[in-house]
Amino acid sequence: MFSWLGTDDRRRKDPEVFQTVSEGLKKLYKSKLLPLEEHYRFHEFHSPALEDADFDNKPMVLLVGQYSTGKTTFIRYLLEQDFPGMRIGPEPTTDSFIAVMQGDVEGIIPGNALVVDPKKPFRKLNAFGNAFLNRFVCAQLPNAVLESISVIDTPGILSGEKQRISRGYDFAAVLEWFAERVDRIILLFDAHKLDISDEFSEVIKALKNHEDKMRVVLNKADQIETQQLMRVHAYIISSLKKEMPSVFGKDNKKKELVNNLADIYGRIEREHQISPGDFPNLKRMQDQLQAQDFSKFQPLKSKLLEVVDDMLAHDIAQLMVLVRQEETQRPVQMVKGGAFEGTLHGPFGHGYGEGAGEGIDDAEWVVARDKPMYDEIFYTLSPVDGKITGANAKKEMVRSKLPNSVLGKIWKLADIDKDGMLDDEEFALANHLIKVKLEGHELPNELPTHLLPPSKRKVAE
Image 1 (tube, one colour):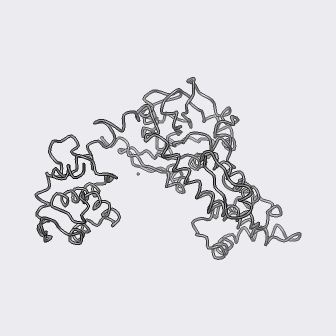
Image 2: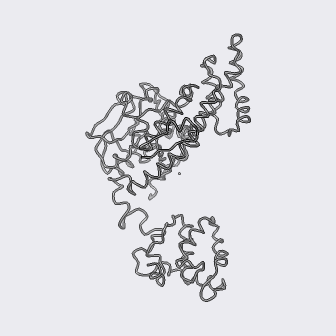
Image 3: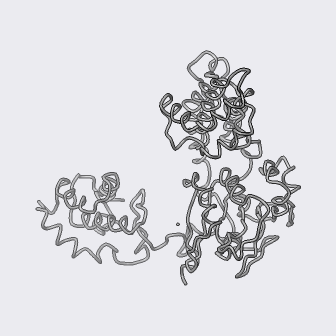
């Protein structure tokens, strides 16, 4: 169990006690963030309110790409089995959003049933109407991979107007809804079809605020913040409320305020030191405000903002400690089964024999291959008693243009006897690790046994 107390009297009387990160986030959202959202009608302008299922469900991965880039095949590869509703072919085949999830019995649940299931995180999708719900299903099946994650397969993004069929719903808006809620977005590109259609451009715009979640997969190569928005939204609504006449001239004043929304943005930016990038889209906000009754807007309530600021400054910071505790208690590999099985060990493990792992099975020290070249440099650095000083080593190492933080880690790994100097073997090892990093590989936290210089292996033991 993890608990903490705040500094003020209220927090001392009512300490926050959380068993898990999920429970903590759920409680903080309902008690501190949701009141702010509701007070300023945030859900009518931006994201709908979160429900318990949004906190309790497994992490979700969203697959996005043009048709025939291999999205469905990618899922099948991960699961190592077919899933209900799966169709694969050279032309557009997946014409629905398919949520691939763990289930005891293999089968398909239609979209209209999904949006009324409180245990599924899809209830708010009913806002997109029947045209979308008829193209949304959940494929359930027992699978070890799906015990850890759920995967959202999407319709292929059409590459030309001649092939584009009217979907009957706002495809980009649906993708944006999923993008807000998933934990990872994988953009699949076909190495042989790198064109960007009009619809693909719309999709990229819809996903632009979620770059931190995005990973780009170039397939077939064998042949690329909401809390602040709520605060800004509160300032905007309260500013409009303050300037709205109480009785006369409401419609004219409303039109004037909407047309001058850019000026209101600028004033809020200056008064509250908010970055321009944190404001909602101006045109979209103007369109939404046209349909709103300004008389129902609430004035600025500082207490609600203070509660959220306090939550971000104290509760979330403390909750991160619990996150690290949970991470240390989990096994190293979170996702099991399917293509994830055996990815850590053996010659077929991820990254085996590459980067710092190169030469792991060789009888000869892998650094010895390039040591003659490193020796030539070593003897130009004025070694004394077979060693060069840290200052002289630094002059050579900085030529790699790697950050000092990276070079510091390399020094720590290479200075095996910890005497603050490098002999010829340690210097060669340092250069080998620089080469590993420059080739795009990660550095190990501890030096692997096969990289230890032969003369230092007894020292390390």
